[in-house]
Image 1 (cartoon, rainbow, N blue to C red):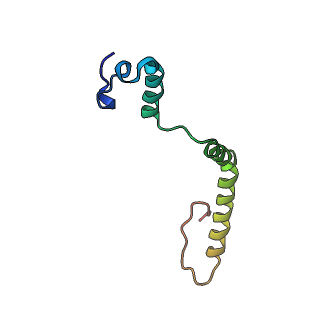
Image 2: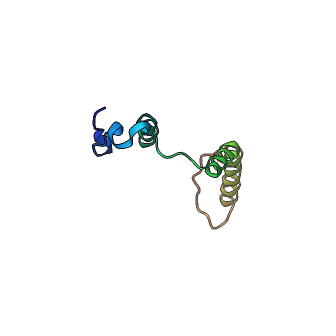
Image 3: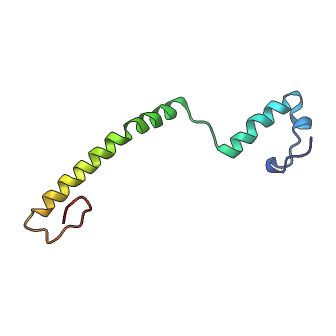
Length: 86
């Protein structure tokens, strides 16, 4: 085993001993991919992904309603919105 320059020259066999393989197997991917999510954060992300299409559909509907309202308002000179026909 050679010193690992990405971990300040640590030699896993010398410094960790019998657990060298598992220590290296745990820290290298963690460095390369980032920390693991907590279960609550993973749950929140999954919930967000599952409802993303519904939320975006509602955003589009709300933006359309606002654009149409502003288009018909007396104090609005012009409106530029991709969802309007003109």
